[in-house]
Length: 360
Image: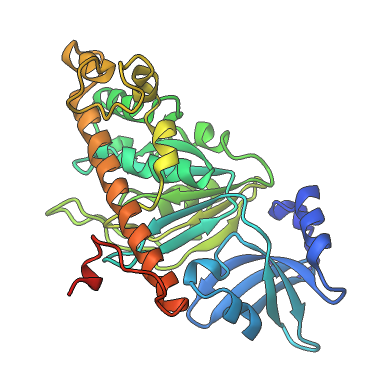
């Protein structure tokens, strides 16, 4: 993007964003979209071109967690500094969608990877790293964030017969489209591009080495993102992308590359389980008990489907594993919230009986 006048509609600005901005904006504020975040601040795109930006002190004070600060894809209101290619961000417009994961460790906070995407390309490689259970985990979080998921099976040139992997991916994805691609040969790139219209934004997510940056380079038509070869000894990728960046494609769409993730810690995504596992949700309607856990209950339609082969047992087990993880995180979040509220209120109420921090 050059520093000439920019029509924000090419970046996804529409009438709904305009109404939100007008309802809260001060006369001196200008709309902009965050294109890159680094340790020194932000690179944003305004109607007058790209500028470097920092957040105001008030915005930093009001938004106490990193997830509430500007992220790549956010629309913001800012003031440009006179005579400088710099600006100060004063407000973040409410996000339509996001992709986020829980931060590693016991801390109950989330790491927002990107915001305001129309589509999320969940990328896996057709090599020894292909893992349908990991795919299900990614899809839960994409559904939770509100973007439209599309599964990409990349590196088709490394797989003599992709049909078995395709079948497994389709089972894991449910109604989500699955596209086989090869960034090296161009296979499937037209089909992939058809899922990204002009003015729409897509994010590429996946583990290291699946070829996200190579796919973006292929869409762009030249190398705009660095790539690295996968290690031969263990087929693991190395991090080519170390930042998140919004890239405008010649076709009119926009893409956000994300660093490869060794782990994808689940967030609080209970509501997305039905979207990620629609087959289990449908089967569950025939269970004897409305609150069936699909584990030991008599009359469980899900267990019957596993027994007669209509539902893959590994998919069922992964569903139970993910739900158990989410239940645990929900309880941890409940205890964490309770502790914080007690401390803010001067600890007026008795501790939770099952709160280890409050035990004598």
